[in-house]
Image (cartoon, rainbow, N blue to C red):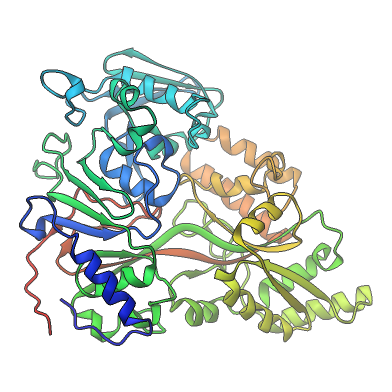
Length: 545
């Protein structure tokens, strides 16, 4: 275990929390904790029904229990899962999946004498119809918006027909919404399926003490194997606790009570990392950090239909883009975690990303653009109001200070997250902070924010950016089946956006994971999916110092 260094938070509070957790750490009859992967979910889990896997916490949980037709590897490539292969015909509108015949649902007495049964194409037909059921009201129903029809052709063949070609469709099918569920179990439990999940995944549900602890056990009949034919998963169990804040979660990690922490919270970032983003010496012996691109762009946005002249001015929008140092901002405010957004809106890690099409720090150019605006308009003290939430106040204040040097005054208005969400959707904010995390790993998901048919509140185009040239390329990308040519189209669209500058990209986020060094096989991916079926834990000889 680690030798603890001083913390800035209340030790008495965390000591109490520590005792609470320790009293609940036994995992049934598993004596060897090297077979148990332990993590905390501070946001809690709302449902283990994949049809309701909207939040990352729920997605992490359901991913261990359920499978779909296809899955995604750490490089965002779509791979077979329950579907062993597929064909795409009819001008890329018909997808025919050939299913494995060795996939079993987790055991349940409702399955009859053998307590389990094989998964068939009819199970997928039921599961997809359930997504569309208005009475179920799944938040994932939108995944099938471009689907015209689907059916089980026989027990091992499932076919989906689209209304129009959509190159990102296979990526959509990797989402947990599209997992297969057994009809007889779902209909038996009804809404209580959320806490009585039966799937086909590498782990099976064991026990859930809500707000306290959740336990999964190894599925000994799981169908996937590793590269040498050894059955997956390697672990015997997963244990999830629900401490409600990141500070106490990190203390549990530092004390060796959990194996993994995701993300970099302000409460402990300076404790574990240097300003340059490296592990501090006190942690480097027992902890390893994994980091990589995350499909999340953090940005500021202008409402393009506003009558505010400072926002209508392309010169001022570009002055803001070149008027602050993104690299300096990331070093001081994020300990170097995150990639300065000097490219476009598409984040690093997706085809279509181009680091050269955006803006770099050019303070003299920013001053010149502001000066030209003053001369052209006669406004000698231009100002603009930036609306944000408290979580990003430090970023906005940094930008505010930097832009003051150019002659532009920025007023920062802090409102609750729910208020900002509603106001930006209804065109009530002229300049606001926002972020976009990909629903599926294709740059079309990002570019949809600038398609004119998607004006908010009926779509995600919060800026009300409109360009006929952009719309034509966006529509053409749907028909382009060559991935390289489609990526080139994406880059052209992104470049067009940056020329007009309806946004100020701040940074492309990174997935950051801290694990103990006795954990092997925990990878990282740009969707921040927690994949545990290939994780091993070795015996940890480290003594408490």
